[in-house]
Amino acid sequence: MWRILRRWSLRCFGGLVLFTVLASLFYLLVNPRMTPYMISETHRLGQLDHDWISMDDIAPVMARSAVAAEDANFCNHWGFDGAALRAALAGGGDRGGSTISQQVVKNVYLWQGRSWLRKGLEALMTPVVELFWSKRRILEVYLNVAEFDEGVFGVEAAAIHYFGVHATDLSPQQSARLVSVLPDPKGRSASQPSDWQRRRAASVANGAELISNDGRADCFAP
Image (cartoon, rainbow, N blue to C red; front, top):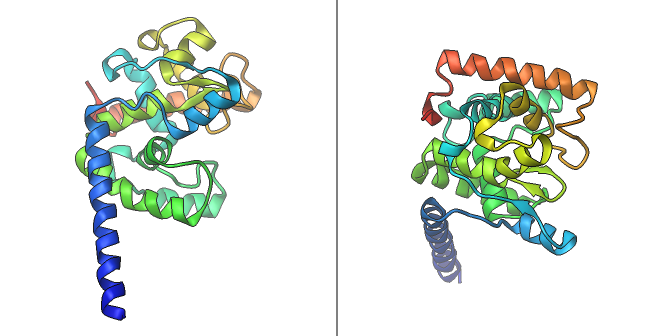
């Protein structure tokens, strides 16, 4: 009995690993234009505002702002940031210590929520995505699937929605304000920011400049 259970457990684990590798390779080559959450929001709202663009068409300062705000050590980890997680646990941070890589895995492959099953799959898939994808690809996908307002997904749609410009033309201030709506895009506005968002945007702008100067943006630079 135990031999049979062990054999089937190994087969199931091997199949899961194989699926994870194939799934990672698939979205390395194909742009994930719809995610499970985007599909559910399409059913709820009827339509979405979303335009996929390449990383070359996103203002570099927008990429730096996202990293400065969400995962300042993005270039220095392999999917998990232990220091950020400990700080989040100690201070009750909004993001719970999740890296951009983890958020990409959750948004592209999995579902919303805090179940142990989802967390386990996220922990399994994140290192695989880090292994096969470049940091620039991870950030490109992140900026294209992140929600910035109700029904508004991706930085291109968000730039037009809030500021009437394309993502390639975003200024440092506009970039910082877009990032300031995360992780509550339905409750915050980039064009009509609260006082807290203005302070947050100023901090993000400083952080974006800092990581540009100290090399923490090198892994996704053009």
